[in-house]
Length: 171
Image (tube, rainbow, N blue to C red; front, top):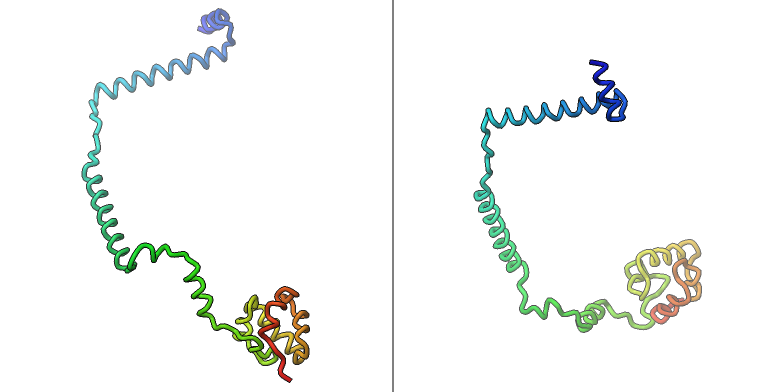
């Protein structure tokens, strides 16, 4: 048998190991075909086809219920006179919001007595800057000149020029 394998491998120009590997692959392939045909012919298994009708109907019903619920909730939540009111981005409403904030009059805030809430009303002064002004007052004593505010971190010439008309120092 070994001689036959050697003759065949020489005839095809391959080594004995390559021939054995090729022979093994062919045998496994043929066994697979035989087993598959045997299973099909002996068991006659029918493919079970899944019916999606029920699931489709259920999905459609759920989607319709969600749509009804969302339109109902949107009607309940948004009682608006018209669409133009919803989409009104005009400056009138923005100006009203600005004007609703208490308008400062000139020289209305005593810088040495103002608390954080009062200082925040100054243009460009937020919570942190207001706290820094109060901290500066506590560490350096009362502010004697308005220009001392330039020593507070966060207040530069630009911000100082915006707020100086609203503040004063009471002697």
